[in-house]
Image (cartoon, rainbow, N blue to C red; front, side, top):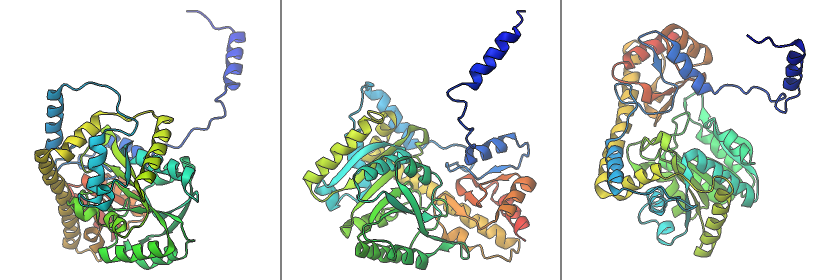
Length: 417
């Protein structure tokens, strides 16, 4: 075995210490991935992972929609090529995405006022929106709800926007702080930029009622606020794509300016396919063409053009009448299973004589339940019961099933006595 001389060893250390990357700090691990890693290491047969925001069937397994499988087989039979998509994406997908969001009879769609491009899922849509707004909107400051999806902050900051928050969640009621949100929005300067979750607010599951949305829209109109809607759960919240698009359609019907990020990760289960869309609602066809041209310039200098496979599947589900009907039924089935698990969890806590008010479990909607548990209680859930969730007490209801909902109810009861 060849021996390394002391001189060579010293030289190697000098090279390493002089490396260009020597000053790069080690970044913190992703919180959600850390939860998953800890879950995998746990040998408790009753362990639960309710930290990850991905749908699971009642057996706790990843779920591929039957309509997606049918679409894949249909695409295989077409023997398609692998050519580049246009910079703006697959036209049949972007036009159908706009119709899904704004409605078939929307004036925005009928008059061609939507500049809609394909994005790399909802994350890519948010990033593209941030880059566009930073380049062309009058202020780089965006106001986001407190709390909001954790990734909103780095995405928008990376795009060059500055972040401030407005009140949204009331920890005393585990519900919507409507009065606080209204006060904060009323206090904003005119033409401020505001992020809104269209439905199934992440992480709280707390949504405004239709009447509250109308009052918020009145404030937005009065203050000339520009809205950035994030719609990652259309159809996945209530089981109905029309109901979940209420806020977006209300704002467009009132003529309020907005941009919209859409994702098909949750409502089609296309997590790894990265299918999404980004839309700017414009005032006239000339403006639409100009905006779309600028979106294409950003995309071209970023990733050139988007991937094909996911949007080909999504396009089939959106445009093929038979597949669309199947998808709508499956989407409703996923939403209803989560709603049933919410009821089961609340009932399980009631049966154990819990003295707490758990009505927020069923009042909230969508994939996540903001439980109201504090960090110490969350730690006990993990350490004593092998229930893994984020420190803020957010429970992914998609990880709850008919076989473990009672176990979860008992665990929550024990740590919250």
